[in-house]
Amino acid sequence: MKRRTLLASAALAFGLGTAAFADDPTTVGFIYVGPVGDGGWTYEHEQGRKAVVEAFGDKVKTIYQESVPEGADAERAITQMALSGADLIFTTSFGYMDPTIAVAQKFPNVKFEHATGYKQADNVSVYSARFYEGRAVQGHIAGNMTKTNKIGYIASFPIPEVIRGINAAYIHAKKVNPDVEFSIVWAYTWFDPAKEADAARALIENGADVILQHTDSTAPQAAAKEAGNVITFGQASDMADYAPYPRVSSIIDNWGPYYIKRVQDVMDGTWTSTSTWDGIAPGMVGIGEISDAVPAEVKASALALKDSIASGEYHTFTGPLKKQDGSDWLAEGETADDGTLAGMSFYVEGITGDIPN
Image (tube, rainbow, N blue to C red):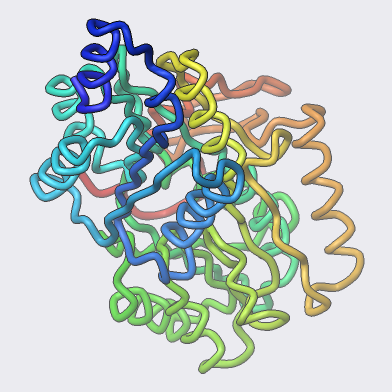
């Protein structure tokens, strides 16, 4: 029980009422996997935190810890945040899932929100975005713009979220350019600028003139700029410092509205454990401005694809599609169900190489 709850109980016992405690701010915590200045994933979560502050003013107190490694360090950091009096804690990386569940069991009166995971509890919600919808738009542009027909992809960890993105980008690049090839480098990190830059340079040396990334720093953008004649796409954040070239568009994660709603739910006493997976239509996934480096007709068709996804007219994973091993997956016109997408562990037909264990 929190200190202010104990005080309020004492006030009631003495007939003093609780008005004096009604204005206590709601404390909202954030656990970040990277630095707030990473220019990508964590930067956008930090913008969400700032949106909460702007929306609620002195009704909230926000705290955060950045660059928290996944695993045991995360459990310690989340525990400390709960002990510090947080009412609601957002844990913003896949590898925080089990630590979040473990801490939540010890603090049943604290509400937890875990990003990109799937394990829930009475006081643990999960939320994520359909990033793969944005990857489809990126793949469409990439397939149209590559001159070498070689597209490089810097992947973080072999989890369904990342595999979905690779497949979505490949499918839509292949639709507009049947000769396209994907080369995938697994970086085994979310944020490591040196490693990300090395991966980008290796892909460029191998002939890739388009680089996609599911890592969080702007290092691949810098490597592409250094190489020249290589296009890139912002990941999680706009990365507009590299526009109009090499960064020709981006996926932007917009967490602010979700964070504001969930904080309001805590304040109202209506918070319940939920599972949220939103995409382009509700605005959780944004497509950054497509620069003039992209031909007008390609820009127009990319925006049309975005609009058809947003309206529900088109699903990113629509058959006919086969798995990498040639087995049937989706028949003509059939669309993938969320259960399959949530647990995706296979490449689609045409992608070479194995998914690491």
